[in-house]
Length: 362
Ligand code: ATP
Image 1 (spheres, rainbow, N blue to C red):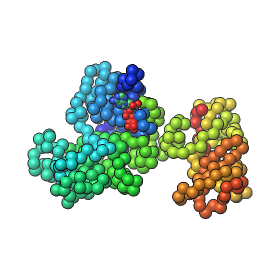
Image 2: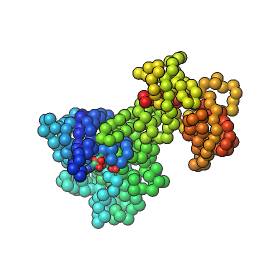
Image 3: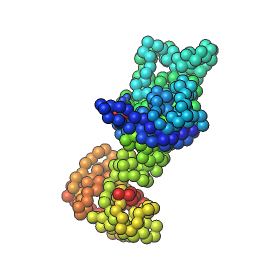
Image 4: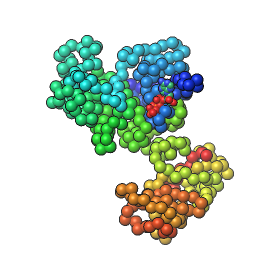
C-alpha cells in the first residue's frame, strides 16, 4: 500500500519553547518498498513513524494509507491505530516474558477474536517464515536476542498487515548479529507484498536494507532517493556528508565543456559532473568520496584531475589505509589499497575520477 504524507506538522512544547518535531513533511512511500527514514537523533524520525501509526496526533497536514485518509487536520479525520492495518516492530522487542513464543505471536490474533484453528495455522506459518519452528513452546526470554527479534517480527506479520513499521529494530543486537538479521530481514520483506517503513540513524543499515531512503534534518525531509542516488549523487551537502565520508572542497564554476563542468579550486582546476543551475562564476562545493581518489603513478594518464599531494597521515583501518593527503591548502581523505606502497611524508600522484566529482550548490 502506498502511504502519502502532505504538509505534516507536529509541535511539542518543551521548557516553554515550541519544538518543531515535524515541519511540513511531504512524502510518498511507494507500495511494497522498504522505505527508510534516516537522520541524526532528534530529527523527527520516530515522531513521523508514530504519527503514521496513530500513536501521536499531528498538528497539521494529512496522512493517507492506500488512498484512505487516516488523519487530516482540515477534515477532522483521525482513524484509531487498530483500524489502520499496520504492524510494528520496535527497538526493544516488547516480547512478553511470561508468555511462550507461540502465545507471543498469537496475541494479536487472540485480541481480534480469531478462531483457535485459524490462530494455530497462522502462527505456524509465521514461525516457518521467520525460521523459528520447533521453539514455539519455549519461554520467549529463553531465546537469543536475534531469535527474540524474529519473534517480534513474526508477531508483527501474523495479522498480515499491508504496512509494517520498524523503529530501530536492530539497535540492541551486537554488530555481527545485526548484520545477519539485517540481511534476513531484507529477504523476508522482499518475499512479501508489504510496504515497510524503517527508522534508523545507521547509514550502513539504511544503504543495505532499503529500496528508498528519505534523509531527514530538523523535522524536514531533505532528500529522497535510492541508496545509490543518495550515496553517489546527493543533491545536498548535508545528505552527502551524512550518508558517508565525503571530501567537500570550495570551488568556483569556470566553464562547461564536453559534458563536464570545470571548477577552480585551491588544488587547481577539476572536471566534474555537470549540475544544472550552476552559472559560470558561481560558488559551489566539490564533493568526492575517498574511494574515488586513486593513487596513480602512470605518466600516460590524460592528465585530467591528476593532482600531486603529500601524505600527511596514514591509518590502517582494516581492508584499506585511510590517508590524509595535502594538496596546496586543501586536505583530502583517500582510501588506499594495502598493496600500494606509500608512507607518511611521500609525495604521490592521484586522480579524482571526474564521474564521481559532484558539484553541490554552496
Ligand atoms: P532518535 O533517533 O533520538 O529517537 P528521532 O529522529 O526519532 O530521534 P524524535 O524522537 O522524533 O526524533 O524527536 C524529534 C524532536 O521532538 C526532538 O527534538 C525531540 O526532543 C522532540 N520530542 C519528541 N517527543 C517529545 C515529547 N513527547 N515532548 C517534547 N519533545 C519531544
